[in-house]
Length: 345
Ligand code: NAD
Image (cartoon, rainbow, N blue to C red; front, side, top):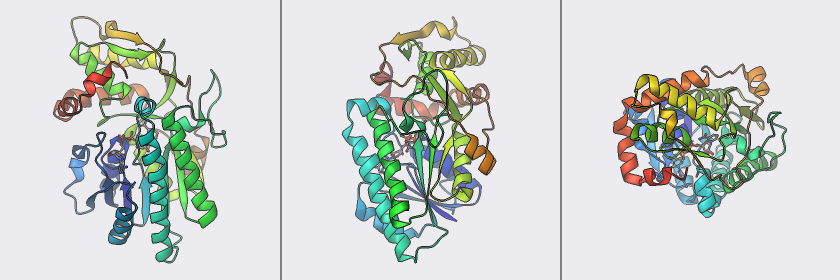
């Protein structure tokens, strides 16, 4: 099977590309190489005869049509997006252009190609989305696939919009689609503007470890390699037209999460004082959702999928990876000055 992966130079997309190639899929990685991309993320598979790269922007409809015609994929896994909530608050326009209009362009290109190929039933357009489309939970309850959408940030609103477009292209034009809505990911190659790499790298640099509000916001954390595994399973076995929630069954408050990272670092790279002493509470993010939690019953019962690691195991692997891969993250910090943003994140 040949898969067109959009956003394959990003954090999750590159995990999908690496896993798919290791399992013998052909992959065409389509990425505009925005600030969040890093081609080093796919270096382990870049020389494979199964791998091809196309630098293209999903806002460019003509480029998309040419790529479908050139590569004739059997499936699309659509991960290209603007993905950082803080950036969406500072500048929402780019999120509408890429996440909404870009997804529209990709759907139209996929549909034209699929129709030209005789509407093969085996084709699949898999849209990768977030649990943030469901809004915020109180102290109890979980998001199911039937939970009404109630996005609160420009990022989650743009992802909700793209989910609705994908669903409509299935209902209206018959395009074979599946959707997945996933909780927060973490793991190797995570761009150093997101919470977990910020905490690891700031801790090592002796800088404050910024936590929004009082640190009580709860997220369900999923190791990125488990997510990639679930995504390939849904692509292969998911029922067309359906959504699948994917979660780690690992709910932690932000404060608990940061304390766990500090404890791991205290063991692996002891400092003069416990790293937790660097924790600093900063003014809360506007519209900050209190709690996300995923009910994974559908993917577990229909497809037999479960996460393979606990958050403690996954965090230890992640911290080890950052300790061993300074060659990856140091140039990113210097190139993008994200270190300057970290105090805000
Ligand atoms: P990321 O920011 O690390 O990577 C996004 C990739 O998309 C980058 O390589 C970037 O260059 C590319 N891209 C951005 N705009 C583009 C455009 N206009 N045309 C072509 N390529 C473009 O994001 P991520 O964290 O890997 O997230 C991937 C997908 O998974 C997103 O759709 C996101 O909404 C979704 N998701 C992320 C999480 C998470 O915790 N990170 C959780 C659930 C769902």
